[in-house]
Image 1 (cartoon, helix red, strand yellow):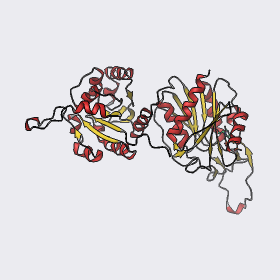
Image 2 (tube, protein in one colour):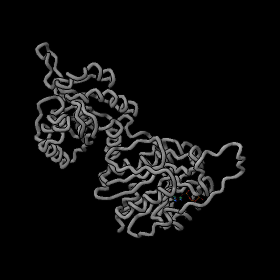
Image 3 (cartoon, rainbow, N blue to C red):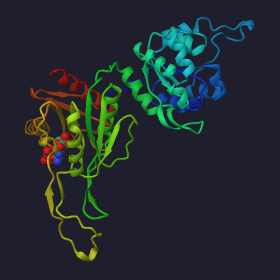
Image 4 (cartoon, protein in one colour):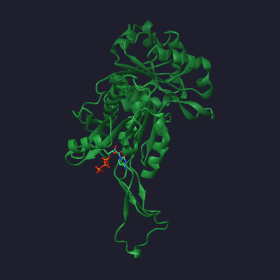
Length: 406
Ligand code: CTP
């Protein structure tokens, strides 16, 4: 597999003073698991919530708190450490970032370890704000966040939910996995290039019920489609995800429509398609469904020898709206290119994403995938085995080109 983009990457993690500071422990762990080198800096108020020793132990590096070393009188000096950190970093993340630190950065202050490094930073910066709802939604804070966005600072917005005050609303620190997904895009130099695009993604299997207990399903985990939806959102698109039953989770900002069977999938696609610029059909839709549904559990004594099936409607084929870009998948076990090309033509797709079940570690249930993209010019583009998130980005880059062809 291609190397993880985090491998050996130098990340400065700024931690500021809010209750969500405790979540930075897991963030450090996750970044280190991906192979990053992490140096932590903390504001003095962050130390009221969590100790430098904890973060130093987890990051396996020294933690800087005071931008002016407190024990200089004893002859200790970190010299121009803030400049060194600003040059050293491949990426800086501030998580959690308080409204105070957001305001300071928006106005160019450099009065503590975190803001001083920001002022000297050469790399890109990701900020994950966290605050109680009234502080978060305060118009001054929202203006400041807008200022940062205009300066190409990436904001991983807070999420809604139960807050430390007991109130409910926006302000929870974004999930670590979303911060890491954002960091992966930034480290991969992928731009926010799908702004103002509306993208409909389908994912997962469909379950075709036989009776209240049994169904016909398939092994799709939904990972590929969920990765596409997440990457498209982080690249600026408005994303609607129509998903069959899976155990995957999605960012709260993405509109999730849960369906169970092929017919419900079709109904939801029809209801949503016209608002979209593209449909990425990564769901493994059943081709057949039981002819009859039994309202009661079919008993053993019934001696069922066969279940009659009828064909489901081919959803991709049924969409004739030429304004919408259509991306299909082809999961094949033999004659991959040939079969994928047939699907491209028969379903009038803009491109088809072929994955072969013969490739090791690719396809259903794996975290990785290996795809070949075939467009209307018929020339296959092969990609290496990569994480499904990386694969998702390859598909979206291809989609972006197709959208530009209008
Ligand atoms: N698809 C669809 N509606 C269906 C079945 C499939 O829109 N009822 C879509 C899938 O989501 C995928 C593409 O069509 O994007 C190809 O699906 P696949 O199962 O590989 O191909 P089929 O056309 O069903 O042909 P076969 O199963 O014979 O390979």
